[in-house]
Image (cartoon, rainbow, N blue to C red):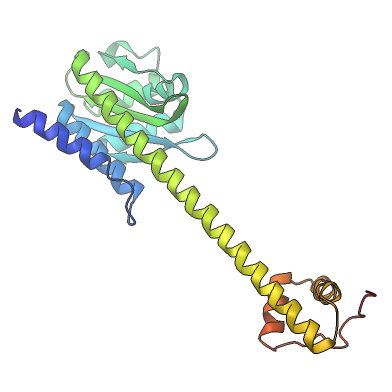
Length: 244
């Protein structure tokens, strides 16, 4: 295995390491931009990622010049990354000096920054497109098929990592919400038992008193139950006891 092959393998392993407690998506995409520039032999790399509204945002760039060029795409709603994101397919311009009619503002900014060719690749997983990776080169001419294939593989690997991380985060949120619901239910049952004993009510009546007090005072049922269990309120005489 050559040194370059080993480096490619190391980068793919690095990009797969997203399921960790301290995962930071911005740091992750900064690494992706740097590794694309390193492995693909391009001058710079920029990465745009869609937010939950489907609007692209600049999240990483390997150089300040690339960052400014990528911002030009977003500000003017034109450029290879936007086309790659919308179509879900790679977009290439081998000589930006001939692409002025397609992306006039982006082309002017890119050429002024010293970039003469661009290759944009979607960050996709099946039918889902999360964003786009933009490869900028100071030399004119298209990238080789092997380079494009490796670049797309890097973008796809990063996309899979992000999707897995989001899925894990959603699962953690669902788990936390379920646990909160279970904790709330236990607290309410404790409050019902407390009221049943202290007010001499049936279980259903105790719950009705608890709920009536919460509604009358515009409070969450769980908060009222917590106060009852902690002895901060007794509810004795606070509301009319509903009939059994």
